[in-house]
Amino acid sequence: MAISFRFLQHASKALALGGAGLGAGAIYRFQQVEREQFDLPRDELWSFKTKEPSSSDKKKVIVIGGGVVGITAAYKLALKGHSVALLEPRGEPGKECSACAAGGMQRSNPVVDRDSWVAVTKSFLSFARLLFGDAEKPYRFFHIDWLSTVTDPFFLRWSATFTNVSLFPCSEQQRLQKEMLSFTKYAVQDMVDMMQNESDPMAKKSGYNPSGSLSLSYDSPRDEDPNAAKAKAENPTRGNTLEPSKQLDGTNISLQEPSVLHQKRQPSTAKFEYESCAASSERFTEELAERCAKNPKLDVTFFYNTRVKGVSTGPSGGRKCTVTQLHTNRGVIVVPEGAQVLVAVGAWTPHVMALMDLYAPVYPLKGYAMSVSAKKVLSSKALEPRDLPTRIVCDKYMYTSRLGDEIRITSIGEFSGWSTRPTPDVEKEFRREAIRQFPQLESYIKEAKVKCGHRPYVSDGILLLGRIDTFDNLLISCGPGSNGWKLAMGSGDIAERLVSGKTEDEISDELGFDVHSFSPAGRVIPSPIFTKICRARWGVEQAGEKDAISGDSS
Image (tube, rainbow, N blue to C red; front, side, top):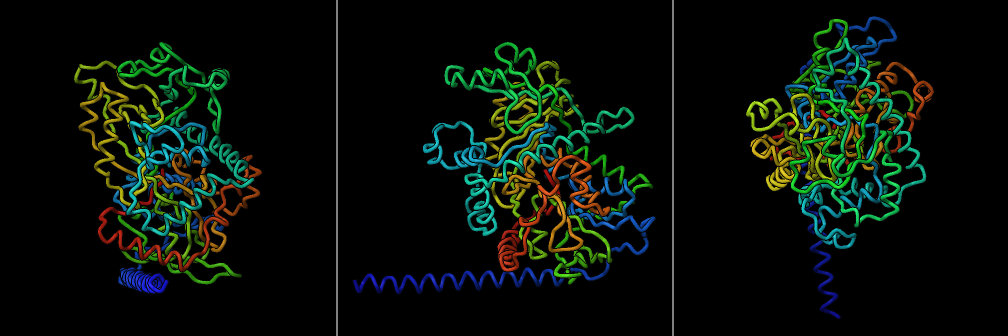
């Protein structure tokens, strides 16, 4: 008994010393982070002083982030006469997540629920595959870097919320998903209208493809529940989607998409969403940025290679704060009275919000992408046009889009912190599965460059869009995860209406869905101690990480 007591005493002391050591290390690292911020250039980089809006109802807006969401918001704001300054850490727009998006524009939303949680868990935990079934999985579509994640307090908090929402959804969750779907329909239609405008070259520039989506299944009919098979045949369009579809089987699949004939294992059934569209998020972003830069009627000033590394705030009316200065690697940007700040940095949202002591429930889900040139393939004369995918062709794990000359192949979800470098083992697995889907492109897939982008995964699966209720001049547009790019026109439109002075009630009445559903109120919250701990942890990670922080969205 005495030995046990003595052991507990020593163990308690060891834990106390270890905790003290970790605490001291965190404090030291945070002091280094603060010192780095103090050492930033103090000269004023730019201000709105010489760029007064044309009338009193026009606002000055600083958009942080030059991905598809940030660029589209700037475009929408400038169309209404607002004066915009856009800050982007990279040298060009849309070069992170926007450059890796699959391009799908379906009127549908993935949902955070028990099924999605189980699917994710089974993919990277072998014992979970035994527990929930599917012990043999030839392809792990989801990966996790345990060292990068479980040592990050931010991930632990985010994953706890994700698990709670997935397994124990609140009564409001279904309503919120319904509002998200209505918003998605509106946002996609706004984008399609631009693509279908014959006087607008955007469709050609972005590789717009309205040929539909073919979702393949390799399940044996005898393994499927007869009632489920009958329900699928009678109503293939189910779940959180508004896309009409029909069920195909046997030779009807290859008649619709001849490129699948090359697959070693032929699909047994397929869902054909015949109204689905796709386009290149990267090229769409580049084209809008060019329009903002070249059109003299659009007042947008771009600051590339400009990273926000500190934020000064001050008191405002009542209990609210106001953003007064943005400290960047190139100098200070003063936020004048009445100006608005829109944070549209995708998966990097937690980093920017933490500079204001705000917790934002967004974690990066790293996606992998590669591109193959159809023109290059056909020039070899070894394959014919019918051998190449002509539309969106996808299955459980791979998502391939035909975007003009480009064949975009995407897959993989990976939790591994904020690094955008491909993980070698994951990249190898990704290439192998791409060859499985399109073996006729094997030589091109082997030589294609793989790049990664961060999908901004919101823990509850609901878009973050609106005003931060603890600030009087701060807005956010982020998420919800794997379909942010197709929402960009819609989210930019709502951001513009909010900046122009309309209330969420007024916008909801005008657009026909509840804009309050996407509000960051109660989700993006003050958390000064926790964000300081996270910044110290991220500072350790970034000390050895050379990736540039890109303001981008999926």
